[in-house]
Amino acid sequence: MSLSGITFSGLATGLDTRAIIDALMAVERRPITALEQKKSSLGKSKNLLSDFQSKIEALQGKAKAIKEIDAFLQFDAKTDDDDKFFDVEASEKAAAGTYDVFVESLAKTEVQVSTGSPDRDLTTVVDATTFTFTFADNRTLTVAPSTSMTLDELANLINTAESSPGVVQSDVRANVVDTGGTGADRYKLVVTSLKEGKQGGFTVAGDSPLSQTATFFDAMTNNTSANTKASDAVIKLNGVTLTRSSNTIDDAIAGVTLTLKGENKDAGPTPRATRITISTNATATSERVKEFVDAYNEVVDFVAKQNELGEEGKASSPLFGDVTLRQVRGALRSIVGGSASTGNDAYSMLSQVGITADKDGKLTFTESKFTEALNDDSGAIKKLFADATSGIAGRVFSRIEALADPVDGVFKARLDGIDRQVRAADSAISEKERRLELFEQNQIKKFAALENLISKLQSQGSAFSSFQAPTIRAK
Image (cartoon, rainbow, N blue to C red):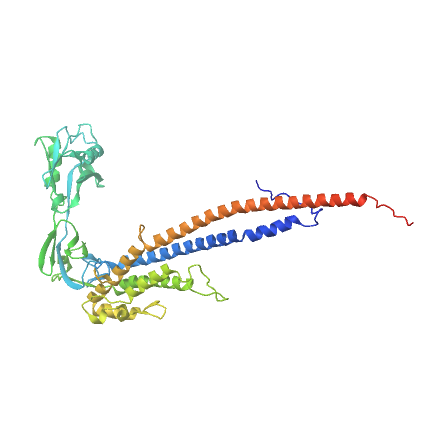
């Protein structure tokens, strides 16, 4: 039990016993204060290491963005006719070059139009005859309307019917169209394939050639003036004819997507092919490299800041001279200062492509020099950064992956070590606090006993002084 609340007046000894005990306690508390300061420093170290790890992982993310050999270079795709016949888009998997594309025909979607109806009530044209859609792949969709069904209900019946083998169909879409005319042809049922090209083609037929339903839908298949027959897209690529079922073609030129929207034959009496030029997008590629350099410099700046001295020449950070920081900085510096196998000795190091380091290891990126190297030999620059074995970005990524491994990486080991030291300090503080409390209790008891002793002695002295000394008479 703590006795710190007990005070003594010092009436017996004249001493301020509480002040003496507090002074003794302050001396005894010094080891605890030192441990608390150590804990505070460890906490700051842990926070700073976590910040450092975040910067390292940010650098890893930038390295990942350029380490893949197919993702490093960015490309532009342009046509010589302002995209009149198709839009073109190049991905990072494209390759520089030129291609001539002639669009002979677009892929067309099957559209079939029924005979007309003066209103949305089909009772005058439809009986209960079953009719069947037959698709290009021989699947079928069977619909059985009722005689009381409206035109909108028939459209809904088609849209919700199931095709074999029992899956809700998604190949055609039926809509009722108001042509704006008058008489028997005002309202028509329009059925449109949901697939481009011949793969989406279909026919419609009733099960009785004499029924009203059969007549109604027979017009859909045979109404050549209103219908659009399914057809595939046809293009010539460098003189070679290609056929595709869609107007979006992404497998004719590697890494390039063509979205057809017009036919070259409509361009006049002497139509010509459209030329596509695929070239390296130096600006986009440079931006990726610049982001990598900036992230690397943040790591360098962080390490430098932890090693700064304060005004009195003392370390200003608990991570001053930290071995983990030195290890990480050294590993990364060795990679970015090294070489890669590019097939071109003129572009085998970062310093040769506009990325130079100062005496502190901080990088400077000169975009103009990088662009010049990229235009001169994009293949070598790609390998310098993204070669699977020696590419700079790939090696940085792998090194950081090892350093930041959640099981046995250096950050994990370092942070775990700090946690162990904090726990040990907490345990030591608890033990010393317990001993300090006992020490305080003992001091209070000692001074209480001292006061009691002095008080008794003072009482005895007063008793002795109360007796009168005997009178001695002269003879």
